[in-house]
Image 1 (cartoon, rainbow, N blue to C red):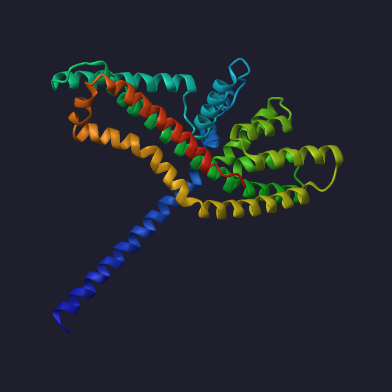
Image 2 (tube, rainbow, N blue to C red):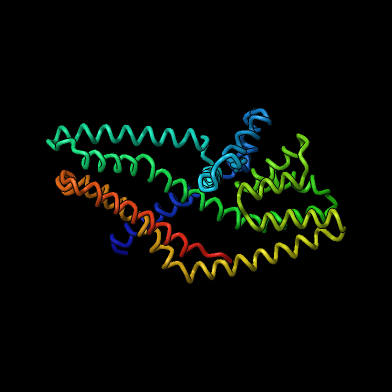
Length: 333
């Protein structure tokens, strides 16, 4: 046997031994972590010794609230922001988070203004307007985009987990558990976000809220039609009677069929949705990138008085385009 073959066999044996050792160690560490770790955020906070009322208030932060005192347009914007912040699990309120973002935007604007002055650019009204827009892009627009992406991911997780939660709920009912006990079972068996959400419902019921009202509030927090159908099914069964387990089992099948149709529609419209995201983000990224690489490209033009009107028109056209794109890719199934 040649020396090269012996060397290859030895190296292969060393690699195999190292790979098996790492798999055993990682598997042991993972099983130990799974054994001692809480399955969702609510159980983890309870395990850490937090007060139930404080945990409930923290988990319900940024839940949609009453906006009757606001004009209809502002009420819609504020409600949408609350739902985005709630789904993304932002620990701050909408007002506090926006104030921090605006503070960061102002700080970025001041830094850019001083840098422009140090680079020899005059502080004309056009330059100030350009730098202010750049500060808002960095401190406000980009964080809101990240929060929106995070919220969309969490909503997708809810849509995927809810039929499984109904299956567990049905099995608990058929095993003889009452509705309240079945919901409590979901709080211990489901991962986030559904495990925490049903935990919030269980805590609200424990503090005296009606079960249907607590479930309806959960559906409103996530703006989820599947949850609303679940609440309607429970309400009708409580008033008219019937086999609740069979009703919810049929509901789970309907939700899965609708989800399959929705995924087909998303697959067929994926090109348009990706184009919409690119057209939404690309102007902001290209503006920031161009100013970073070649500041004079915009700064020299910003000295012209007509720049203010042209740049304002471009911003208006951008928002009109974003609104039109969102309406085109907002598919309902």
